[in-house]
Structures are given as structure tokens and as C-alpha cells.
Image (cartoon, rainbow, N blue to C red):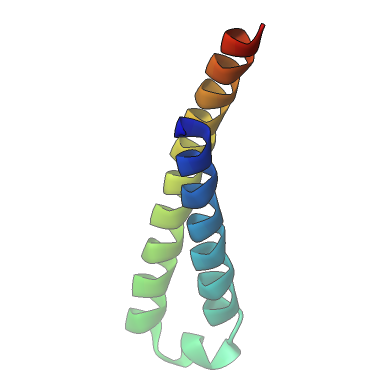
Length: 69
């Protein structure tokens, strides 16, 4: 159950990361520096969230592995 929740969260965060990366890849965005900074901050937040979610996923996977052993 915990592992599935972590996987769902990782999936959503990866989707968000991909959308933000596509937005940041648009050269026209950088014609609006204030807006570009906002999107860069959002991207950084998602990347931090991914790091935390991956750590939680690893803990859940280890817990499941121990329970199955």
C-alpha cells in the first residue's frame, strides 16, 4: 500500500517535471525573465519533491522486502 502510494506520487511528480522541462525549453520564455524565474523555481521545487519521494519509495520498498522475507 505504501509502496503503491509512493509510486503514484513519483509518477505525478515525473509528469510535472516533464511539463516544466518542456516549458523551460521554450526559448521565448526567456524573453520574459520574470516569468522564466517563476518557472525555474517551480522546476526546482518539483526536483526537490522528487528527491524526497524517491527516498520514501526506497524506504517503502525496503519495508516490503523485509516483510516478505
